[in-house]
Length: 238
Image (cartoon, rainbow, N blue to C red; front, side):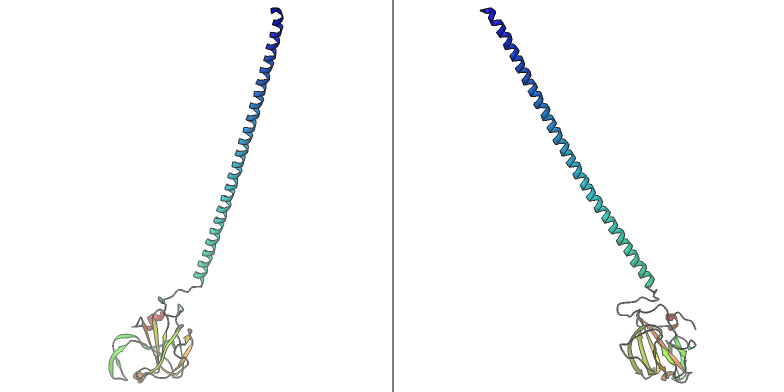
């Protein structure tokens, strides 16, 4: 009876061995399958991350490029505007304020260039009045009836008649400079008129308090309310 059991035991051991080998093989198959899936997921996640990073880098590059191009365009426009402004703006000889009209950087003579009596803050003899007084003006030689013109662009402040100066046209030439054209006969402008350099203001008559002298235009200038030499203002000389 014991002899018969030995073959049966061998068969059981063999069957058990086969079952163990099958279990081990199945475990290996499951293990390697799991590792392959995990690696695939990791690779996919890495690829997505790299793609997102690339897209972000592209967006940043595009934004930086656009910003740089915009800045360059703005700088070019600003440079062009500055160049145009420098090109078209004339250099002024005197400072201009908000209440003055624009003026050019050069001045015309109001009539002839010859000076009969120059500017003086010292007392000088006045033959007509037979006294001594300051001559804060320049007397330009000019024949009666000759045209008197504006030394520069400006705004006519007043047109009046003075007992000593005769008919007077007062003009604001900008930069706090006011000129008085005295001793006119006919007048072509009115208060509030804007005039241009060289425009005729009228014709010459006479100056009552200087009637004994040669025919001339009595021309006064004030800068910020104070008398100044018209020749200095216009950059001229006697």
